[in-house]
Length: 219
Image 1 (cartoon, rainbow, N blue to C red):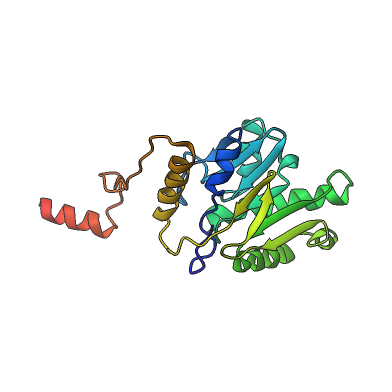
Image 2: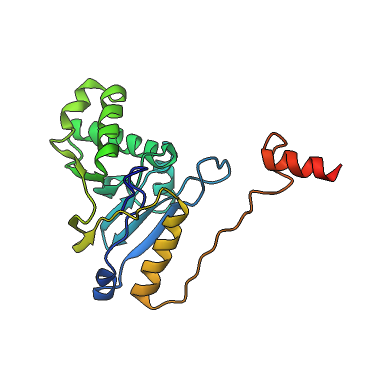
């Protein structure tokens, strides 16, 4: 699913999908926010046997290392979804596109589908046009398909009917809420989430407003 006001924000399979066949494997490639330095930005892969569905790419070429470290071949990521246009979700996809187009040119890769909201698709196409080599660009939309999806639209992914939907919020916190809800409803599992204000600590720089206030109050 996505939020149109911010670009795509979330994708979650219809809960009926999980009830039909609960054999999918979730591999987290990263769990960090935009500014992390000790781990990689949030992105993951859903796998059903040798079929894979990659969601987001993090903020750079480290996504290729993360895939390899997780025992996944980037060449097998033939279906990709980009949730929204933030650079910590998007730039890794540009590296994936470069690798895909380069290996297409060398005759060692067939084709892939990248799904996203129309705004993100336009951004990916624009960045590719500016950053990829000219001899790689002909593969865009011919074998590397950039596919815009809309609210309520259904596609078959990993052999399952998957619905893209707008969460109707610009708040990234909604992502965790709806993902937990989907898995709780689908699997009947005990799952909760919360908002932890762990950014407020002595480690936060003194240039932040909240730190200025607490420092002044402590004097």
